[in-house]
Image (cartoon, rainbow, N blue to C red; front, top):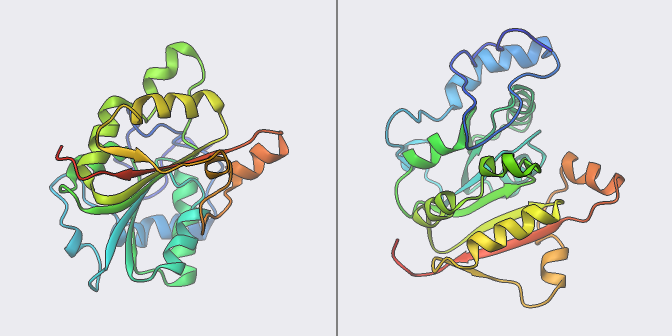
Length: 239
């Protein structure tokens, strides 16, 4: 474990919201260099209201967000496959951010911006109805009863998702923990702001088109767990 933050992470903070380990294996030299040189150029300033139109060097047709992108496997493919869409990725884990920075550099992804910290800071800084899609994939399940208040999905976050997604936009959730899937359904289904798109069981046991398997999903498969894939569509109900 590294004892001090990697370059570019001096102001990193772990708070209730997007939970995760701040430290992991020591970064490779080039990863540390990317944290020091590339990250400052593409990080999202959450200390003030975010202007989505000013984030990217060219106009984007839409803005999508991924909360807790882990190693960036899904986010990187999404960005490569949708160059006309701007992406904001949030992840507090240094090593995951470093991996995503490597993908951004390797593939020349000028349509990705990153927030290396608590996702709620980014959510609160964004304007109403600015997102067309919001992905929350394999969030920390916080399985112990006393920990569940730390889960990212809550009545507050669901309302914040509703504020940010435009009508017809989608909130996508994936987890291999049945209890967290049920927890999420119990908080989203009563909301007038979202409609669950599933019509039959196959709709939530098979990934949506274009889904990229992450290392967390591969681990779940190895350990015999099944993932649930939930898609909720933003209704045209004012927040």
